[in-house]
Length: 252
Image (cartoon, rainbow, N blue to C red; front, side, top):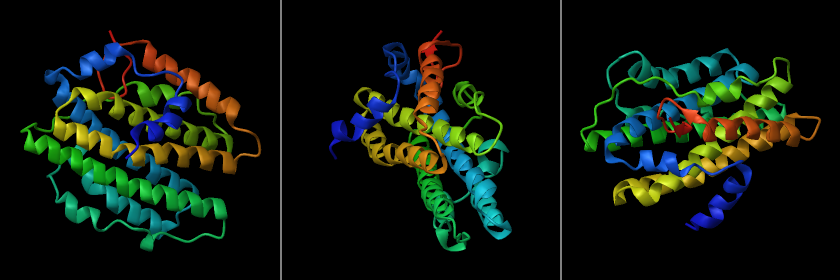
């Protein structure tokens, strides 16, 4: 894989690189359990975001119920203290066969992109969980970072602008994830390095899918809104942050 070529558009899109102070904190071995835990939860939250977009804008009742069924065991384990399921078996149930078809070309693009994203993010979820298990890192619930909350706070409240903004925020979250995996890779052991680098292609595609969907649904050039959320994202990444998480800012 040509990592520099893959990362180039991601780095061009993001308003700033990850600060060295965050990398210095992240590469400390004692912070690995926290980073892996937050990474795992972020994968589930990314799947939830995609699920909510499909349910709100495309899916019928049966499709909505199928999506809820896909994610429920993951959510129960992660947020509800439920038993740990067989994630590999669960993953085999996910596919587009139960999703509704639509005559709206944009709706079908959303459906196709988000179902693939859900499948990939849940795959990454149990990959992170496997890494934790092999290193005897127990799963302990943690608080969420300010990052996603800080982005969505500026989402407009009327449609289709609300949807456009949601998609742009999704693009920034996916692009920042891609950039941080690449930033971390040189500072971890060989197993983790290979894992982080294996995630780059899908994360890079996810941010591009979100941006393409946002532009396709908009009657206007989305560049001003992309620029606006870039400013918001940069502030979250470059300002002091009291919590250390995968998407946190400069460690306070």
